[in-house]
Image (cartoon, rainbow, N blue to C red):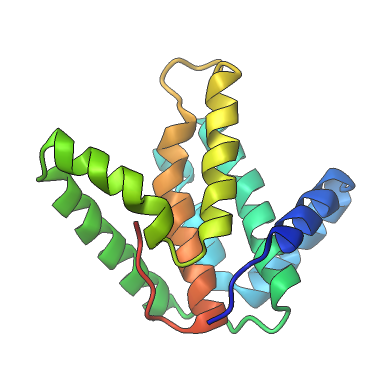
Length: 171
């Protein structure tokens, strides 16, 4: 099993820092050619999120995708069927979590890092979202970086499926 390294995450962040709008557009063109079903999933979240949440989702989608690509430029295309399976599995897991009491939820949250198939990516995403929250979150009081996390977890699982195959788990 391949894992995304800290170095790949760092390179992805460096790439992002040096991009202007035309290069960001080129990235999305590349992403739409290489992972059209994943991009459709990401773009499908536009109506469910505030503008600020969606902007964070796009930014972290870029970094996450680039980190996976830096680690393994030969990531296979994830099909629409695979995307649907990952979403269904994630929603089932979320429903199961909702049925548990607060103590079980806290324990599951504490184990999330250990259970992630890509722990360094998951750690990066959590730290980024926590930093945004500490910096005051978003201007819109109905927005929260935490609302973006489940979608990012599914994105991580989808990209992991492209790198390692479909047998992933969403925490």
